[in-house]
Length: 496
Image (cartoon, rainbow, N blue to C red; front, side):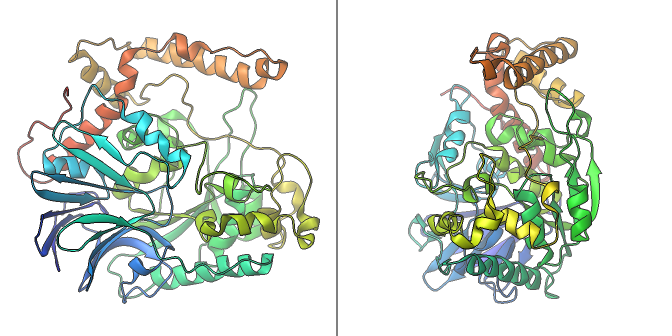
């Protein structure tokens, strides 16, 4: 089957949407200007393999998405994490597959349902690889979301297929560490391949916790020499979460950032994930241009934990890591989540923590992660610099409302067109401060004495806040339509 690329130069750098009639042997792919093209493939990704071969469909060590034509059909490839996804639907006899929900809505003329709570569906991805809700309704068809599973179109139907699984066994720490460093070296070969049309620069995030620092060590094997860190934790009393000293011992050039809401960018891309602001803190960084492979330690808390868990594969309590799904397409990011590498062997990784060889890196306390501790200490990072307490730097999510003046005005107008209440900027600011303080007091004081209350965020909640997902996706859909160079159709949301 043939892939027919169609460049849309004003689209976000890495966005793409495939459109094809059921039964067709030609896949038309509308794509942004920094998507790479091969003879039988199209990709916005970095993977542990030869770039020119285009075999990103034959590995689960892939960060980004792509399309690969083979003899058995066309493979639509998801990222090897659960922090990126593909959307697809069959609408009026035509298939749409995309790495962006609003891009797919724009090309298909599809409208979300205003009377449906998409937020709860999206949040089911926390339940793991096999339990999340795959199908969401719209006004005209069902749309489907795929994490970690690829999609195969064989000429007649589109279906989910499992990713290749060739991860070796991890019988000792050396097996696992060797796998991580070898993966990083292969990623470096891929991103530095001279056949690439667009330059990619590596960047790591570092905090004073376990996971990001250990991931930064692995990133060095991929040639990464630059890092970013958020200096201030979101706590009642001022505390630092800076990874500057860790980065200094790793020899990485590091830019610190003091997180403030004024620095949040492209808010709609984050609100459009699940109607929550978690992860907006990632948008404050000045990422290298034109493209960046961004190393993080997301999910280290569930993969590197010193426990043998009985949870579903890739289950997590947080959706914060999803924040980059849409933002990265505009900014030009590939999200390399180091703990995901090899994590289908989760039980083997967790069992490593209990081997006698790991005892020197085991503290026998609640916040104890021998694997990342060993990675850091063997990279000559002093023990006292990390893993002393767990800090939080994610954007607060206690009074649910946009932050920037432009986003607040846009959302307020959206609500008023529907006859719903929208507080003034001054009232929204006051409510945010009250609810945030209430939460910090609860986390740091009252719950420690067993005083459990619902909190003021439930008192100051109103109906319009449930429409943040709808508003953000309407704004993004409108942007995609406008950048196609045509007139703007009715791209909003409506009733059932």
